[in-house]
Every structure is written in structure tokens, then in C-alpha cells.
Image 1: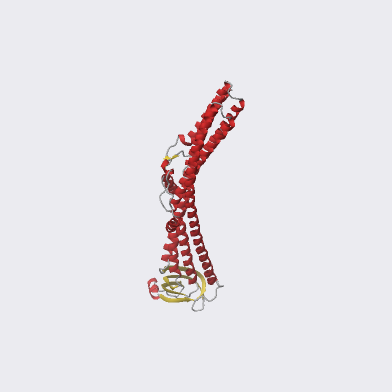
Image 2: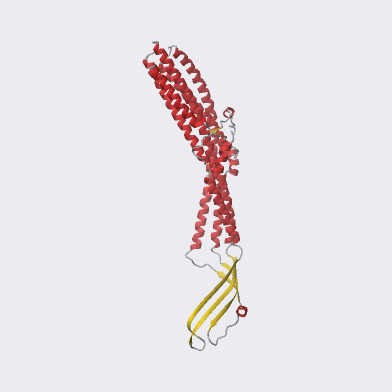
Length: 449
């Protein structure tokens, strides 16, 4: 019996050591919360995708600005022909013809319902919206990194707690074995200790798995190889003792409203949609354009008794010029222009409504975040007191159990109560820190521990 117990403990210790080493033992780099955020913002493909969209918006803006300039084109056309053709004398003769036409042309819109001007204004707004969307992506990723980082810290503490509980279970089983050998304990007591040890082993395994997964989640956010071995820097314990909870929800909302990318993006989308209505209305107005051209031509005909002028003489003599005004008045085009205005106006109302929803949602989130922070502070204080009380209670039960004054069931109950209180304290500690950092996030503060 003794040999079996010692072998299982040694095997468990070996396996646990391998598990822990694979998670934290060979860490090549210790990453702070700020470094994790920086790595994410530098590597994440969502940000790169958003920046590419910015580049397209910038290109659209430049193109719309260039659309105000006159168009200018040159053309050269030539044609050759041969065969029997009727000439001026009425006879059909074999002829060879060569024609060259060349010229330049230009046109400019004099008035087009201010469509191009409004398009430039809209493209400027859309470029700002693209930049703001990049900031929104960065903000969302920052919050995800904070959550993942704190999850690792929580899982590390949870693994440490499970390891401590395993040590207690191992010591208790060894002690029960000794007492059984001298006849002071029964097989029922030993079985109870074995059950507690098995539960502790399972808790260690689950905690180690959860920690490995949380490391993987953060690595994927930072967009580094999933096999990368790293560790993170734990905050000072003072970060948990006196976090600032004296926030006024309305003040936090007022500050966040001016800087939070989500609301800025919603406002820019509304502005762009309003300009889209003006662009659509431009299609209801007449369009006036000015055009001009300058060109010349050369003609060569190879036929008996027909003389051809020299190339330069023909180009000089065949010059043609033109200037024109073109006025287009929309009368009926299947009501496409009016339908376009209605669609643009409906879209504008939708974006207005979405902007209000975004602001209202931010207001609700911030009020809830401030309330959650205050509740987290109270819960942390309560769990701290509860853990201290359960630790003291377990110490008394443990001492009495060792001398046979308490049965195995009472001992198990006291141990489970202590373990639960410890887990509750770990959860409350990181929940409090997370809630405090969420407020900093909405206020646009740098996230540091």
C-alpha cells in the first residue's frame, strides 16, 4: 500500500513539473501589458486591412479633386484603301488612298449641380472616417488584449492555488497512511484522503490546460507564432488594494463622447451620408459643359492625272477649329434621379439613427462599467475577508483532525470551503483590476499595470 502511494505521488510530481515547464519554465521573453498591446497593434492584420482602406479613400479623394480640371486628349487616326473606285471623271480606276487625321480636344464642366464639389467634400469625410475606423479597430483590439492578459494572470494564480491545494492533499494522504499503519485511522479515512488527492490532481490539470489556452489566445491576438514560449509580467499587488473607484458616470460619458472612436466614426458616417444627399440632388439640375477642338488632316490619292498637295501644305490648309457649349436638361429618365435622392435621404436617416444608437449604447456601457467597478470593489473586500475567515477556520479543523477530534467529512468540508474562498478571491481580484482598466480604456488613458 505504501509503495503504491509513493509511486503515484512521484509520477504526479513529474508530470506536473513537465506541464508547468512547458507553460512557463522556458519563457524566452517577459511581456508587459503595454508591450502586448504594442505587438498587437504592430502585427494584427485587421489594422493593416483598415489602413489599406484608408489608402483607397485617399486615392478617391485625390481623383475627385482632379475631376475639377479640364480634360485634354489628343488623337491620331489613319486609313488606307485600294482597289477600283469611281473618280471625278466618272470612270472606275484602280486607286490607292491614304488619309491622316490628327487633333486635340478639351472639355470642362461649367455647371453640374455642384456634384463634383460635394463629392470632394464627401471623400474628405470618408477619408477621416477610414482613419477613425483604424483607431476603432485598435481600440477594440486593445480591450481584447487587456482581457486576454488578465485571463493569463488569473489562470496563473488559479494554477498556483491548485498546486498549493495539491500539496495539502498529498501531505494529508501521507499523514493518514501513517495513522492507519499505527491503527489510529480507518480505511474510510484513507479513502477520503485519496478522493481529495484525485480532485486536487484534476484541478491542477484543468488549471494548467486553461493557462496554456490563455497564453495561446494572447499570442494569436499579438499575431505571433502560436508555438512562441513567453511569460507575462504580473502587476504589483498594490494595484489590487486601492484602485480608483470614484468615478462619475456622466463625466466619464462626456469625456468618452469626444474621444471614443465609435462615436466619432458614427458622426462621420452621418456627415458623409448627408453629403450623399447633396450629390444625388445634383443629378436633378441641368448640366452645362464647354468643349473645344483643334485638328488637321492629310489626304493622298494615287490615281493617274490626279495631283496631291504636299504633306505640310495639306496640314496647314486643312486646319479645323471648334468651340461648343453643351446643355443637358434632365426631363424624364425613369425617375432615376428622384429615386436616387430618396435612397440617399433614407440612408442619411439610417446613419443618423445609428449615430444615436452608438451614443446611447456608449452611455449605457459606461454607466454599467462604473457600477460594475464599485460592485467589484465591494466584492473584493468581501472575498478578502471571507478567505481570511475560511483560512483560520481550516487551520483549527486541520489541527483537530490530526489528533482525531474531527471526522473526515468535517475536514473535507472545511478544506473545500477554504479552496472555494481562495478561488473567489482570485476571481474578485482580477475582476476589480479589469473593471478599473475598462474605465481607463473609455477615457483614452494608457493601459499600464
